[in-house]
Image 1 (cartoon, helix red, strand yellow):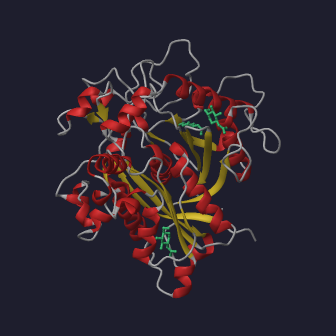
Image 2 (cartoon, rainbow, N blue to C red):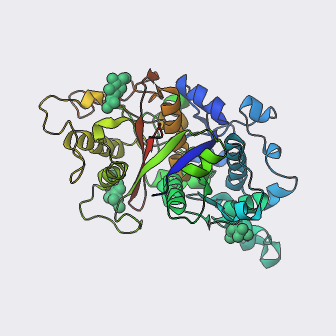
Length: 445
Ligand SMILES: *[C@@H]1O[C@H](CO)[C@@H](O)[C@H](O)[C@H]1NC(C)=O
Ligand SMILES: *[C@@H]1O[C@H](CO)[C@@H](O)[C@H](O)[C@H]1NC(C)=O
Ligand SMILES: *[C@@H]1O[C@H](CO)[C@@H](O)[C@H](O)[C@H]1NC(C)=O
């Protein structure tokens, strides 16, 4: 019998709030987490053409108010050892484990529990500061904590130490696909028997004038909405002109199905397909065709053994850029209307009627901005919640779809929609040409 993998716990930190409940409620209400970067005590923000970002709301009210308050999640003194993305990781791992009601008590349980959490950029600001210090003051002023604060897998180390997890100790970094690859790879560790339980996800906290400068120089960021930050991230809208950088983290507890059933765990969804573009197991080999996102979707659906028309909802990667959103839209339509090729064929395949308007695809980045290495994990959680509550989260800020364009799907514009869906996809792609898709099923059949 093939081992099956289910999701039994969720943890979230986003610009909409800290915690799954706060974030999900605000997402369904169509709220935006995007604010101005001005008046944040750093004049360098003034020099960047894009003056908007999705900061995690902070406040002493903490978790119960949906606010970030570091001392709720880490021990005194740990803030010196832990960069911000690591602090976020500690929080979402704790949230997800609590939600799952899972504690590894015996030595065997500890050996069978692992972690796979990544970050796309890491503590770039720390690195920057540290280089300045070295340049100015020399060797003796370089902090002995510089290296642990800088390493991209350090968050995983801290989580494993806190909970005593001795299973796979892994960290993925594939730019904006990081969070999705982390969950997909962790699901495979369980399938292949390397672990029974994995805490998996992504974390990112790199908003600073320096990192914004880099993305702005690459012409990736939204620059036309500095006066009205809440409208700056507008996937699929005619006037979209770049992404808005956000920060946050997402983690899930993945568990082998029998393991979850034996302890009576609450099961949110099953991971039924995981597609990576390139070959099925390696992320560095690009396919010759170039439409990688379509390939990754097809392979996720083929693994799930379902037809594209069974996919009730796609959480799009769409970051609010002109080309990216259009390419993804095209891929989704091709997937749904042409089928997946060998094996399962879409029942819509060959039908004359245009069913594109029945394709439900939204981008939650309108509300959160682009969380880079955390995006895939956060959006997988949104997809799980969409299935659990039968609600499609909206794409906010859609004011005009391009007339006579290819944008003819249902983008769930501005308001959540009720729909009892059984299967959903979450997509991610990243700089460097890497794409991945997870296929999730609500019911355990
Ligand atoms: C996991 O990896 C981190 C970082 O390399 C390390 O500090 C930690 O001790 C490892 N944990 C285990 C249980 O091996
Ligand atoms: C990933 O998707 C992007 C956008 O669709 C595409 O340009 C790129 O070639 C893809 N990469 C791979 C490895 O498939
Ligand atoms: C998309 O959602 C609508 C309800 O809003 C539903 O009628 C339709 O069947 C859905 N599409 C798919 C492919 O499930």
